[in-house]
Length: 330
Image: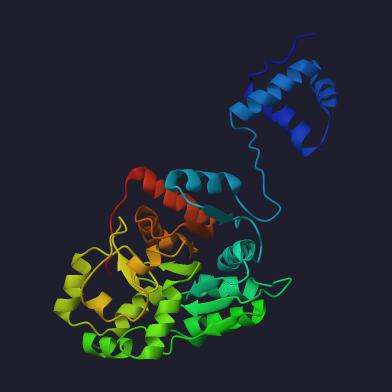
């Protein structure tokens, strides 16, 4: 009997279909192909080597572990959750990311902690996915940045803090102030108010923070800039710094360097320097458009942990490997 060539692609494909798709044993495959069982074993190994067969392991919790490991190693992150989103009918990417962020939140929560939030669709999905099995003792939720009238209420910081507090049985404190002001003088006047100063002090002393990550030309990040009504010279000065992303209304370059100037001076919230002092800052983002912002936050060590979707994770790793550093401008 002439044995099939164990490297013949057509034979490898036939063996793979019988074994993996039809569920036949190696002995049954050997009989069907007129070869030995040991030869079938070699053929299946060769099919894997030639990528005729690809084995994918999906975490039952909906995570992509190999991407989590690569991100953790590449950027020295404390914790990573990458949501599996491919080929799942009806699943919204931000909901999958929100679910993973909610699980991370519940894994990390302890009694007497203070948790700070920014805003955004990803954080909204996290809040709505959070269901605690028990109430936490003396848990407090606070805002990292004031509210923004140009962003709809369902993703405002105040609404997210209140909703999450109700779900966790926690206390909450509002930052009763807008995120952006028309002038430095207006911002400084509000900062002089004791209630606002106390709210920001609470945020600066948080044990953990969950923040959305943006890029200057998309969503709430662009809305913040629009709300400032920058004149031409101010806008040119801002874009000349090549902003790549923002967290909690604080903008930074592709390397994570904080941007100073008129935009920073008109925002009321925790500074990037203050954010760096929080022990565990968790960035939550979805969609490839967030790649520059996420990569800048990682390079600048602005975030300690990351929750994102599979496509964004691959895009960030690809951009990091290619040395991409460009910011964005409309």
